Image (cartoon, rainbow, N blue to C red; front, side, top):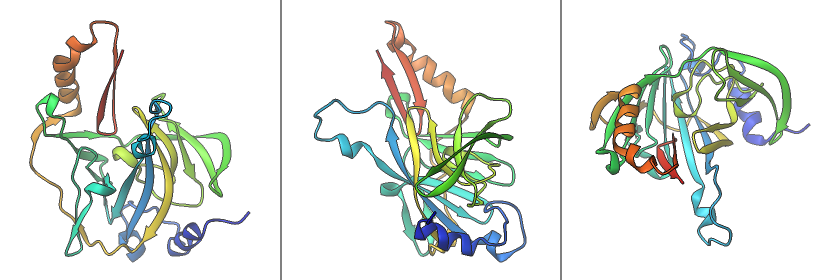
Length: 239
């Protein structure tokens, strides 16, 4: 089966077999890589809504040495080869420890916040496989958790994924997180980025503290049988 050109080029440049994002002394492991995803709401817009296509956004995952930075394409600023991630999808991950810092600018919650946590899970490879976009993929899930369930590319050794996920056996091709899906659209090697400068502006808190803030502020909105979904930099109140 023919593979997409971007994948063939990437495989040639990652032929050493070392996972991008793992600690290694080789130049290839220290190189930069950008994975472009389509971030799409799980709940579709109202039928006939002319803004339906505008709901999809491009989500960029930069891997530079032992760091990964994620941001929407519209919020990615590059100056003098330095990436400045911004917006509520901005996330910086230390791939050696799995710890991350993400930004949330929700004004309804009193933001912006700088939220810290760790999503370095152990992953179990299932027996399920399929071809997605010409790539042979396998389904994986965390060892001690039910979610998220991911489809990863068998031939694309990248240990980082969207929303701060780390420790992966391959690049995420398709996944759901919160009320959004992430689908791999393309891979770029040597994007001309030499470093990442992540904002320090925001109220520091842990994921647990952030969830408590959400419950306190939005709890009254859920008293009439509504539910709340948090993920991908958005909060949705569902009645």
